[in-house]
Amino acid sequence: MPHVVDPTLVRGLDYYTRTLFEVRTRSTDLGAQNALGGGGRYDNMIKSLGGPDVPAIGFALGLERILFSMPEAAPPPPRSSALLPLTPAGAEKALVLARELRALGVRCEIDGRGGKLKTMLSRAERRGAALCVILGDELERGVVAVKDLAARAQEELPIETAARVIADRIGKREGIAASGEARGSR
Image (cartoon, rainbow, N blue to C red; front, top):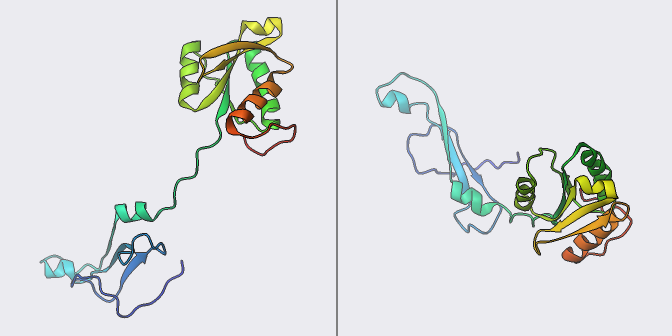
């Protein structure tokens, strides 16, 4: 870690001996109060309080200062789609559909924990999914059910075109055009 030796540094406590330090931020958000923490050696303190002659080091951190000096949080990732397999055949199709969606730049997750559909939909909503693809008995007819969580609407799509339609819908929500090339988001 880069450091600067400052022989004029004072920490305000008289029990330090020889070495003391401060960790400062380069951020200007804290103004003159830019020390995030500090400490030093206090070899004689325990002895002066009647204890044994034990060398020691200590430090303190300012949690609020650390939090204020941190950069802003990154924007949330684009909304995704959740694939909800309800049958063993649905689990196999979910893997294929996930690969197709990711190739089109759509972030998607497969909920392999199972359970009731209502529970799976609730988990997907908490994870920020925009669309849920339900892979159940409808696969026997060559379709998947797609539920729009915001609109609370559901429709069926042919399994062959489902990835393209979902990518287009997610892209429109995010203000990006869906294309056949991978966008690198997963």
